[in-house]
Length: 299
Image (tube, rainbow, N blue to C red; front, side, top):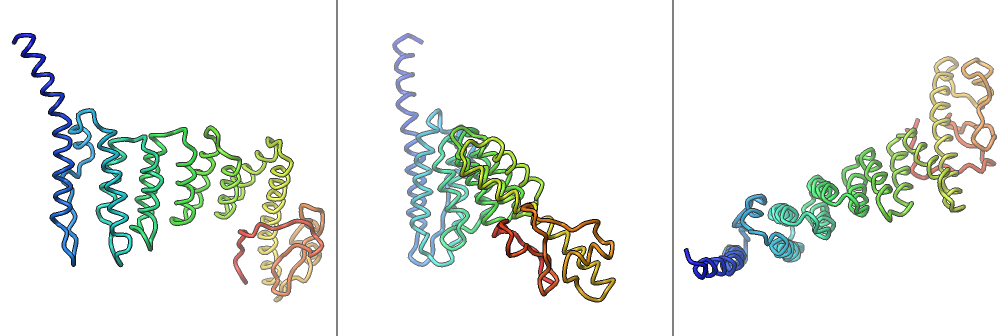
């Protein structure tokens, strides 16, 4: 083959690639348009395999990712006001988008919102978490994605251990605000992981140079210690009730019956008291402030 023929073939190939790419997009658009009816919309994707589409993109992954992300946004916006819509095409579109361009942060962050919202979205927080986890793996220095993951686990999936871990991971990333570490500690406490929460707040207290942050950390440490003490006293009070047929009126009664070896004091040095329901509580004079998220089972 002559040099001129080779050059013409190369030029033809270079011109053909974007044409083929546009043809794929055009065909996909036609499928979307032609399968719509007023009463019902039947959605199809020309290619549902993200890895296969990545191979077919012939080096135009980022461009094609932008196109599919635009399609995902349009698809969501078109159907968000339709009662009972299942958004079945949303995950495939987001899967393709983020496979083509793993660095497209906006697709992970807003895609997770589209997927997780139960009233104006797919109601699939599990898929949203899967999407953001993929984003974290592909963008390990972006703390926003870890924070988004923490929110999904905390708010929608109620997995406080994973939520705390995600917030803690976010706190280690460049430019992450100290709030991320605080969130990790508070969520850990909400999940009754006192050891993890105490460890995080202790680190914040010891390393922060901000007086307000140190004060906040100190108050949380006091709260955590008081919460653990109150839980233990509730158990001792139940033991006392089984022996004496009533709950103790004071911690002194626990001490006098040998259930405890001394009068327990809160972190401020003030003795705990018992309420009318027999549950241990802080003395009203105590300056210790319990975390609002603290939960104890009722009698």
